[in-house]
Length: 267
Image (tube, rainbow, N blue to C red; front, side, top):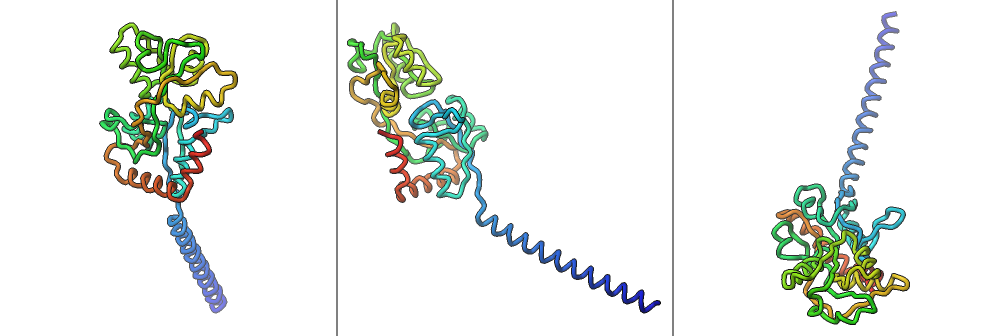
């Protein structure tokens, strides 16, 4: 009987050791998988935008965020091993959100200006923009920037176009300036005759005219503020993120992806 008990105990001991070895083997496999997962792990980059600035950023009826900037930041994320999550928010909230760490970066046709550089850092410029005047096709009074004084002007909130309109008003107090959160609303007001001119980035105005059927909007004069450039904003002092984005931007320019995105969205 004693021998039988010993035999049972010995068998149980062998079984326990076997299970322990299997357990150890499983943990090692998990660790190997974890190691492999870590090596190929996709990190997340949370990016803010204001999707009211076609063709750079816009929101489809499905809710999808599309446009030049959206494809650009996703392409940078892909070549750098980042999953990109994009959040739509008010344009004026973008810089404070970057400063407060609510988002990692902001891309929204955002011009690199001395004022913004006091609050955030910018990547290398990824697009050369510039301002243009848009008027109703029946307007015969406005031909250049000199003709904007004393007129009813419209622009988008937070843009250099809005800053320019404010500058015109400072020079001539009779100038009226209306600011819209959505540039499309500014153009609609121009179509209706509610304002005399819209001052806005050239590629956005050109896109509106090209994609809007039966539009009464036309561009006049020469492009100005031609040194305006767009950049991706990051928290001041975050050199690691800045270098990562600049490196990714350089890669997609080198491999042709940037040109593909440009030719798709910019006409």
